[in-house]
Image (tube, rainbow, N blue to C red; front, side):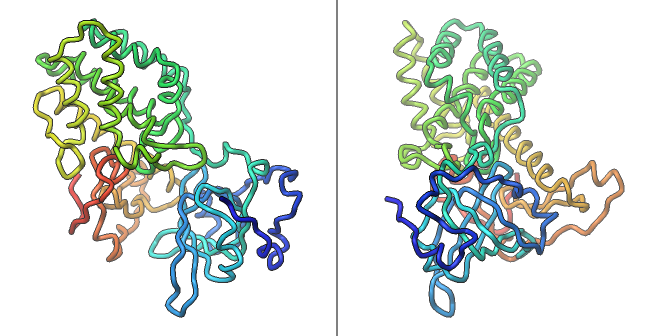
Length: 390
């Protein structure tokens, strides 16, 4: 149950919560997280969704708030050191908050030091400001997906995948779900974007390997992340459902597969086994959450194409987030275990030293194939030294 907030507005009248808050007009969000470069060392006032909330003890005693705030442009770490008791119970994870604070850098990463904070009501916000969404046309992506499915020659596989896309609930979710919580295609429409991209890559590579069963690869590409529609929730921020946290998308996919196979008469049991293996092996390694390694060509191809598409999108997104920076080297990418060189900036003659990772960055969390760390498999991340090899 959400607590009412009565004390914060007494201390901070400009961010007060009144009894008439439900009747407020929408807060016009002018600052987005991608604007941090232009606002470094400046005070900003803006609204965010609370992606995570932790209460931690100060060394000197008393609590402080460690938050991850989000909007459609990304996420930002935030700390609140003073007057914490006044707002401690005023909001929870997935609430919207209006904050005033200082944008600065800590260990080469932007963070927000919060001075004032209040919870926003749903009537005060525009939901489109907070969840990132693909810039591509969803209808066109869905049409491309349908055309690839129609090109499958094996009647059993085609009927199976068409049973999935003919399900209104699945189709609606497939069009809107992110492909991951944070690390790749983490935006509304991300799952569809990822799978269509994967279809295109798999189609091209299959032409170079005539012994590979293209129909099987495409079916695996459609199914390999379909469980994300139940694993992730994306109403306010991207997080896990209880089912997703406890089971993971691969187990969910096996259940979904079994349900749809019941709609396809005389589906060959051998083909069912191959599809199940494609699902449970697509992460490629035991330590990345796959209970089995890819054991036939189509499974190996799917794993590598999925991993490639995920990493390429992760790189593209990082370049986009840091587009305003002069340095052709990006900040350290903990998922890939390295900074990245933006070759377009480099070839344009912009040179700068390679950023050095901090001591904390040198011990990184190993991402699952496709960069999904704990969000895409085993909820317990593996920590290694030094950074991993992609």
